[in-house]
Length: 295
Image (tube, rainbow, N blue to C red):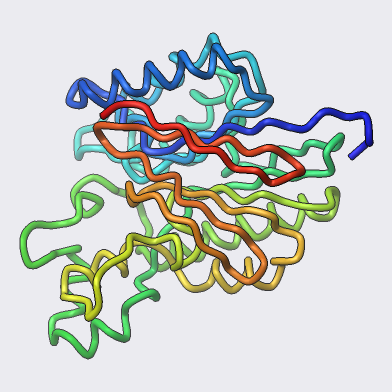
């Protein structure tokens, strides 16, 4: 960075879950938007679970008064559909409709390519990311004889993971994870071929140290949530490139965490349904500040 160049201010949030069912959370989101209008960042990044159905665009529209570069990755809730959804299946949402809606509202869709900031020699790279059970499959095999059926049906001791009800596409979790990670790694390598460093933003945690901290020893449901949270391959790929990846940020678990993978500093943003969190990153100093909105 040029010695006279001012620092870059990046604002990141996740899990806004905007919608009519979440009155307290909607109010917190509006407070977050007001804060951004009063303190405009240089770049704003939304790390998934923005709003299901029509609430995806309603939420993005809230950020229209925020004057800055904007980028996002979708979350699993953002690609939920019903069997009669006129928009089509989850794959059509992910590959076509959500990027169109994002681009129309001035958001760079990171799952389709990195956002390059040449003046700062920085690539912003992102993905919804997904899960292939690899974080817990060996433990599950030793814990319950019906582990394969539970993973297939996403069936807990009580209830089911809603992805089983609303994610509809021609993939298994394993095959989509392979596709998502391969694409992210390609975008990361493309970005690093042009920029000195990268920041990686995902919805599902990029490495285990950012997942929800479950007590030991894990019960069956804790192991299943672990299986449905991330994948080992992305951890490995990031570790191989860790010297040039300064930060990773994610959401999904609604639990704020800070951890490291090799030399990468990772943050789970940690907003929940009834309150929201905003992280401010000063680049290149790396200083992080967190602001909370709502009770």
